[in-house]
Length: 190
Image 1 (cartoon, rainbow, N blue to C red):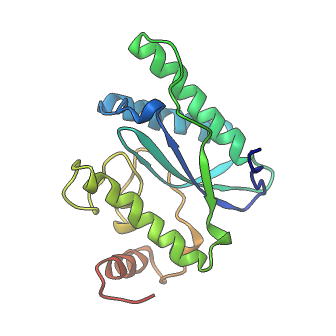
Image 2: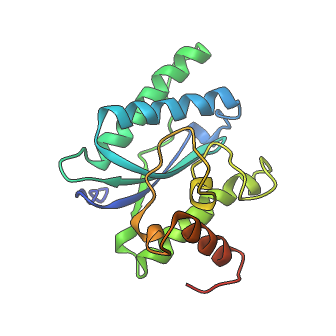
């Protein structure tokens, strides 16, 4: 029997979900843009904060913070994944499942050091496209929101709510971004 999800407001979830059989069904940038659109639909329908996201060819990462009076993490992710599956199947003129399994999640606030866990997740998201050969540097943007944390002038395709743990790094967005980059470059211990 599977373990029930911890459902509560004001919790930051790292959500991961793989495509069926880990196929690279999102290689096409139009498909990645479709997934971004489905996240936007969810943001319009439900109250929650999108902290970060990264869309890869065969899986996705989401950092979602639930809010008081808002939808549960299960409802939010189910909505995003089902809207994407419907539109993807229509676009590709196919039928059948798109997602491999129930999404996996971990809770940032339950980590031994929640702030470090969150900051490392931002870096992990940013490095996914580098490891996959999509971009040269984690500071570039490729269907994800991490650059919003590195560059205070960057405006992602989807509204990103910068997490409080990041905002506590400095007095201004520029200072927070500079300190985060220094940490990731090994120039600073937080």
